[in-house]
Image 1 (cartoon, rainbow, N blue to C red):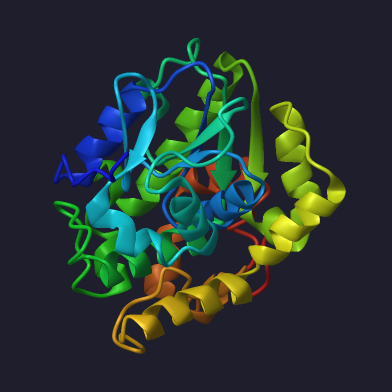
Image 2: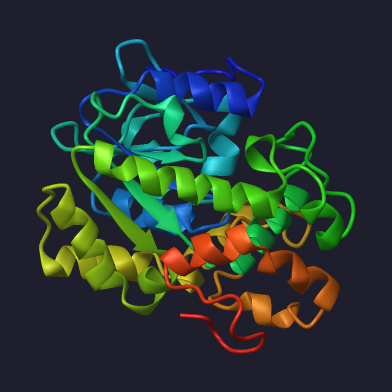
Length: 301
């Protein structure tokens, strides 16, 4: 099948349309932007498991997904995604006899939990996740316009504006994870994956994810998928793609830094740090082991 051209200009509307067409094999990977979806997606694709990006693919009424032609250049910068696209000829990649994972930034009320195979909650320290989302939105604003998101000013101005799901970023992070935490028990299978754990012990974390959803892969296969998905390898692939396109140094990077605890570099700015100490954020973050109120300079784990 030939790759589709962009059918929906608005990325949010495309995402919602795709979400409504998921079925019994689909697992929603819910995470705030900047929480590591590129990493977990790369590992899954390396393992031969189907992974749908709701902004660069169109899910048909029959549930099959197809890459949107206008997004092939962006997808080519993600190593496993690019290889999958080449192998599938622009169609659906991954095995069709197991679960299919669906990257997601929407609230759980967009999904019929009884119809789906399950859900994964992908979480990252909100100070890193929100800052990473700011950097991504600012870098790709021209290619991925999101109405109402302020990416022209400072990080503080971004925090005071509207972000994903049309919410202020910090309140949106807390609301998103509170809603998904409450929704997870309604899914047949579910698990929580922390970005920090995925970085610290990727083999064990990925293996636990596979076990929850009944996917069998050898330890050697998992180790290889993790090795290929290391930040330096994914960044090197993106640099090669940019060089081949004659765009070295002139394009933003999807694989920007991939750090744990990047927040330490800007958290000394009290005017910004204070925004991350609202009661609701502190309570929600603590649910996942992030103690935001106890330290300004050391990792909160």
